[in-house]
Every structure is written in C-alpha cells, then in structure tokens.
Length: 95
Image 1 (tube, rainbow, N blue to C red):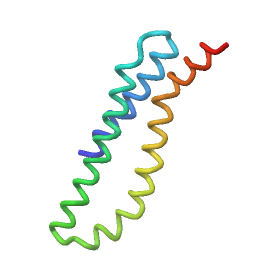
Image 2 (tube, rainbow, N blue to C red):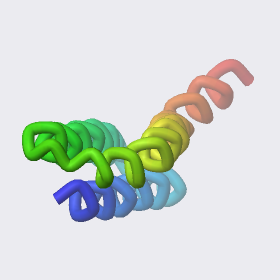
Image 3 (cartoon, rainbow, N blue to C red):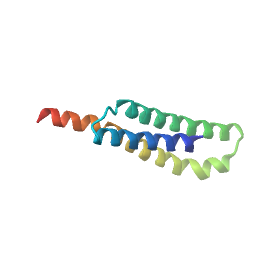
Image 4 (cartoon, rainbow, N blue to C red):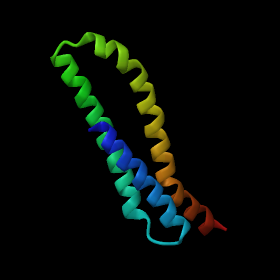
C-alpha cells in the first residue's frame, strides 16, 4: 500500500510542477502531493507496526534502518518540490 501511495504522491507532485509551468492553478495538485506523501509515511509506519505485532524482528532489522533514511529524504524532497511554485510566485511578486 505504501508503494502505491508513494507513486501517487510522485505523480501529484509532477502534475503540480507541470500545472505551475503552464500557468494553471496548481494548488490542488500541491495539496494532493503533500497529502499522499503523508499517507505514504503513515502506511509505511503501519507496515512496521504489523511486523512488531507479529514479532518479525528480522524484517525490522533488515528494512527499518534503510527505509527510515529513505522516508526522510523522500519526504523532504516532496515538500521542497511541492512548495517550489509558491516560493517562485513569492520571488516573482517581489520583483
């Protein structure tokens, strides 16, 4: 589930950037990109929670250290890409 939500977050972020580049309203796509990013993190946390309940320590030891770093990087990247149009608009207004 987390993978599907992550793919949707990536698509929404790309749509956000394309809409901004073409001069159309991008704010709904931005909200969707950020929302699906949050849902991806929650789904991943839910997966880890199910491993804890099942006492699957080997899965936790194998996946969690790498996945934690990946989630941090991808979440920060998603936030940065999704708010880029707003920052560019602010920059253009100040000129």
